[in-house]
Length: 169
Length: 167
Image (tube, each protein chain N blue to C red):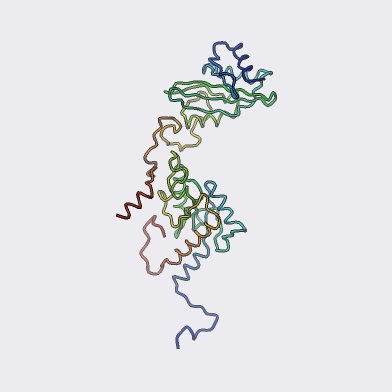
């Protein structure tokens, strides 16, 4: 099934909770209501004609006016895929976890929490996965400012040319 | 008649310092410590073609048995704290080779938020090997430079080394 046909099916079933769908293009997506995320994902996985048994990628994007979480789904039995997006406010973005539907969401949601700062409610183990535990902030936010030092290690290094000129004086 | 010529052929004479240094430089055990792609070249250097084992350098799996730490790869800030801990676990005298652009100065990732811009911000470095990554020949050259450095050390008459100071 083509992605746009899948979104049409979703629109028939969930109506207003499918907020918008993109035009026809190589990788079309559907923007859905965050409150209905788990319900829609459950439907996509359990409906035999859709059978999205694989969450191949889940990622977070900071668009400056909002934060998006993107779900790339794939069905091994039907060889078709779909892309879902949800838009969240930048201040304290919260959304339900899909870990109960696809186990592979566990680490991907930890990564989104670590780098973009989205809180996944109901996640079994929401800790940082890449950055150190005591790291300040979420580095892939557009307004993230790199700290000047970390545990006494300076994070800036002067240009060797500047150093050489100082040495010549 | 000088003393040297009076000795039989099987007796060699040398200075104590030189003997100690020669023994030490001929058995530099380095720690198995690869952080990124430079570690591939590090493995290659220990392999049969470049074969740094002919200089007495052999990999050890523990910091407590190592004389040399080769920082092979991108050092993240998270790893920098662990690197300092491992360096502190090594027994004196200990040496550090910074291998590749990343551990020299942060390299390609210098402006990244998570990367430590140079291992010399964390531990003292004896030899810097440039390259991205350096070829096994370059790392072997670095080891030979370290051996030269070891040969200049004085052990009988020396000031006690300050803690954390490079050998």
